[in-house]
Each structure stands twice: as C-alpha cells, then as structure tokens.
Amino acid sequence: MDYKAKHRYADMSARKIRQFADLIRGRSADEALELLRFYPNKGARLLEAVLTSAIGNAEDRGARDRDELVVVESRVDGAPMMKRFMPRARGSAYPIKRRYAHIIVTLSDMQETPAETPA
Image 1 (cartoon, helix red, strand yellow):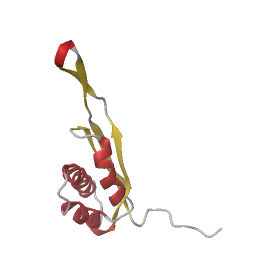
Image 2 (cartoon, rainbow, N blue to C red; image 1 turned 180 degrees about the vertical axis):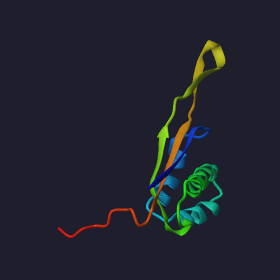
Image 3 (tube, rainbow, N blue to C red; image 1 turned 120 degrees about the vertical axis):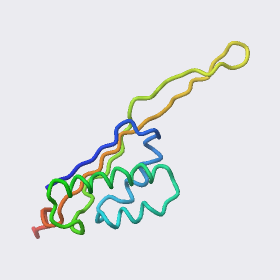
C-alpha cells in the first residue's frame, strides 16, 4: 500500500530542494530520515518534515513495520511564483520572483514492491 504526504507552497525554490529528493529516492524510510537529519540546509529540513509526515500517515493507516517502508517517490515540483518589482534608479524597476515548491513523498511497503522477474 502507498502512503503519501505533501507540502504545498513550500517557501523555497524547487531547484534547491530537488537535490535532497534525488538523494532519498529508493532508500528505506529510516535511512532517508537519517541522511536528511545531518544536512544543514533548509531544503533538507523541509523534506525531512514531509518524510516524517508520510511515516506518520503510514503508521496511522496500519503499516505493519516501519522498517519495511521504502521511499518510492520523492518529487519536488515548481509552484506559482509571487512576482514583484523593486524600484531602481531613474524610474526603472527590477523584477523579483519569489519562488515556491510543492514537495511530494510516497512510501510503500517493501513486500508489495514488484520484484524484477527474469525475462
């Protein structure tokens, strides 16, 4: 069974969080949590919170063993930008793009992941 958690409109650009999402994809949930815990970046903190929420959702929905949970999907998508203008010298203006991200983490039981069958 799949257990999912989302953080929509995370206050950071998707590009900065995506490297940590690539890091934890395919790992066990506990190992991924330990990896994220020791990075000093804000993106790692945001992804760690979503992963913790997904683990909590799994326990709430009746996952048998926490050690068998695997990160099947960790995706970071771009969200809408806030666009502003900063006034500059001589009547000109520079655009400011405040970027947001949607973070999605999906966990699955190890037993239910399809095993590779020889062809």
